[in-house]
Length: 324
Image (cartoon, rainbow, N blue to C red):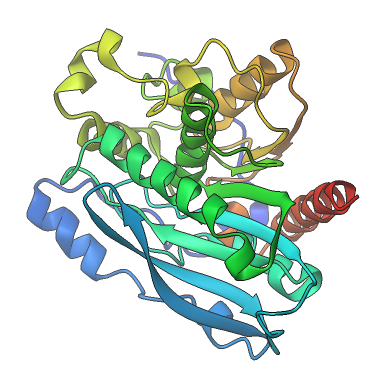
């Protein structure tokens, strides 16, 4: 069988150790062991003297979810009339791993340069819960936050949703679910290297069956955990769980989507942006040449710095335009 040629990684990426590449767990116990080995916090954010971090709980249908609130120090009194941008954030980890800090660096700069309030919610993971249960967690978080904007002095016109990797796919699915339920609206959606489609039919999925960071074969494992029995029943997969399956993205908020050229999610990101355009929705799409999955968060490179700068510029511009 002839191998499929693939675009190369950026030389600065290949020059450093790949700390994100993991073997596929052979059992739930192995997956749980991987989870236990994850850092419980992001030291760069946690130790930033400009950022205050508070732990809270967010209600879901039959329980509570752990979450953290990031605000800028010094905090203004709750009676202040000034309002701030607000971000509901969902973390990465393939929907089977991760915690409230994973990928949070993608938006944390908003706290220090835009006085934003960021709430990162720890949704329940698979395979312990189904993919639709996880989406319901995220939707419950959106409803709760939209009902409590005044508590955090958040401007309703500058309230957005964001996520990285698995969390970005969840953000996209939550937006669709809220649209169809006529639930809360957000002003924008930031989808950083989103995990959108369970089918792995794209060229990029075939090009990166293995490779640096998150690779296709690991993605198949993650989706099987998320979908359970539905993984073998293609017609049973919800568009809210796998937004890449959605045919109608109309009435969605404007989106920012980015990915690397050397990662399996590349083409599903392009397809999602294309579908948004087809449905009359504004979308900014950036594919960074030589970038692997999460290249801007885990590898110190020039393209990573450029990707972060470009994303932050979009965030600031979007929130400024919504400020009236």
